Amino acid sequence: MPHAPNKKQKRQDYREALKENGTTKMPKKKFYRQRAHANPFSDHRLTYPTRPEDMDWSIFYPAFVVDAQSDPIAETTEGAETTEKPIPKKLTKDVEVVDIGCGFGGLLVALSPVMPDTLLLGMEIRSQVTEFVQDRIKALRAKDSEQKQYQNIGCIRANTMKFLPNFFRKGQLSKIFICFPDPHFKQRKHKARIVSTTLNSEYAYALRPGGIVYTITDVEDLHKWMVQHFEAHPSFERVPEGEQDADACVGVMRTETEEGKKVERNKGQKFVALFRRLEDPPW
Image (cartoon, rainbow, N blue to C red; front, side, top):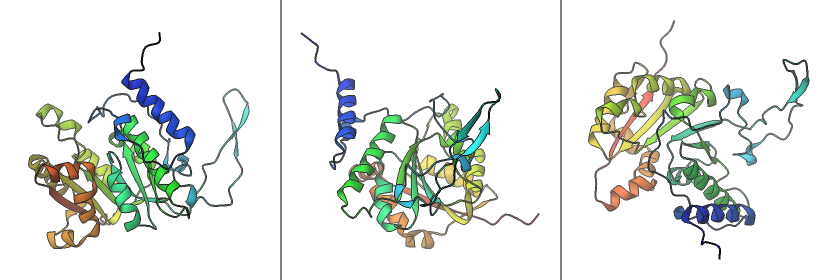
């Protein structure tokens, strides 16, 4: 008599069935369970472009693909064989907003109707969580008979601590969200925090002047750490509280992420800080 499938097999069977049936039902989190955090220094066998121009965004934003596409480029390999290298399909607009460590996609889904003409991307290092967000987006799109809603959001599996500049050109982004990141409480683990002097320089590279980094956490020590490191960076200035509170994205960020809802249920505090990308000094 065959053994009953274990939990891992059940999760795999559920996800495969969801893809085959093309259902409009929303995916269930219990079939995409994974550890709360992943080691950003590990080799996760990630796929990433050599440069931003090589990234094919069309599979994430099919509604924004330019109709007329170029022919493949003939490429000669070391063995003198000529092969055709496919050119990534172009979009009518670029990705402008990134949610780093997007989790189960609550912020992406909530921001989609708020910014309907902007392409938003979630970047998540955990494979099963990424798959959940992708299936969630597919289900939301399938529910819309006119195929207009949620076409502007996508999610990829990526390690932003290593490969952010591989995806985005200098000054391409207008907003970066860092919501409830892993606090890495132990001092020897602080090097793994998503905000640091080095990483802030990468955010400054990808953000256009005037662009905003949004941060939120329920850990006051981490909040102070992020404020300290962004204020110490010459490319950023802190956004005044009055301007911060008037930003519609802040309200969404406070209430729509899964972690934010958990903090709300536990009656915890949320610490918010925004930082504006400054103009580069004249050379």
